[in-house]
Amino acid sequence: MGFRRLKKAWICLGLFLIAAAGYAASCFFGPLPQGTCIAGISCSGLSKREVAAFLEKELDFSVRTVEITPPKGDVFGGTMKIPLGVPYGLGIVPDVKGTIKSLGFLYGPLSQPKALPLAISVDEGRWASAITAICRFFEIPPKDASWEILPGDRVTVVPDEPGYRVDTDEFRRRVVGNFRWSSIPVSVEVPLVEVRAAVTKEKLEAAGIDGVIAAFSTRYQDNCDRAHNVALAARGLDGAVVWPGEVISFNERVGPRLPERGYRKAPVYVGTRLEDDYGGGVCQVSSTLYGALLRAGFEVVERHNHGMPVDYLPMGEDATVAYGLLDLKMKNVLAGPVVVKVHAEGGVLTVKVFGKKEPLKEIKIETSVVRELEGEEPGSKRWMVRTRRIFLYGGTVVKIEDLGTSVYTSLPKKAPAPSL
Image (cartoon, rainbow, N blue to C red):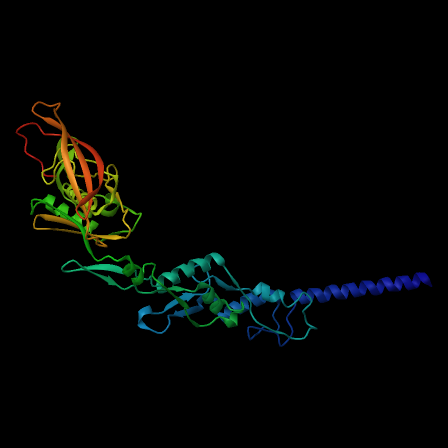
């Protein structure tokens, strides 16, 4: 009896396992029960393997777009349409596998019908690229406040203007939401956050720039290629703002002297020789800037004299430059910022330095030849020139600064005097 009972039990267990395996197979491979819906679309009678292709056809994943609109106001421009998917859209794709998985392994013919939302997944790399494009389209950078120099050397402050950036976290929430296909909007307003300018009107007004603290001029021959180069370099330097502790670099501000940037060939010094090259005459701009910043009280960081004297400045007051080799660098050691204005017209080059005026303060430059020697070439001479800067307050000398010694060699006799 015991054996028969045991045999019967094993047979029942086997039949149960066969039935269970069959039901499991029908759940995995068989049709979904009547009334089963995903994203509001009936999937009755479809196998789990067939659902993905069916939903893609019904929902048309490949052409779905989102229209991104700006907040009300003409300042933000138009709208932007972008696909949901990959490779060129937001990277949002339906997660059909995840949705089917949520049905459960044993969901099959005998189960109660279910209505499920279609889940989505996000390709993070594609999303990041799309966000970058959206930011470029909608964002408006803030405008810093600036100084404007009016006729008569009057100084005024142009107010700053706020900018706007995209709130990327809020934008994701509005589009991706609860990670359901049905929740993705057809149109979404891009969330923008106001961004204040780094340099505000209040900051500039507090700096107290109220007029010219130093000015320096040199003359040049007008209506020639050299004059063209002088004017071009002057425009590159014009409007420079130098805050306390900052160093102004002539080469960085003016840039390379190349024909594609508008520079023409004119005489330049190469050691103690004269050659035609692009940008001839630019050294007069650097030398004039040097004279103005010395008289404004800037500290000399880098300065080089010409190999030969120039005719527009006394020896010891010039500053030659060569892009990538020689630069003029001056540091603002004043208590406040300055604005550098440069103007070249009618053969006169003028550099004005605007800052907080100190009526009792005065700076003078003195040069003296400390040694004169015969040059290496017959008929030429060499000079050693010392330059000093004298600080006065209320007419009284308060400081004398030695700016170093410059060495010059003249051209041989009968050679024309250069104007560089």
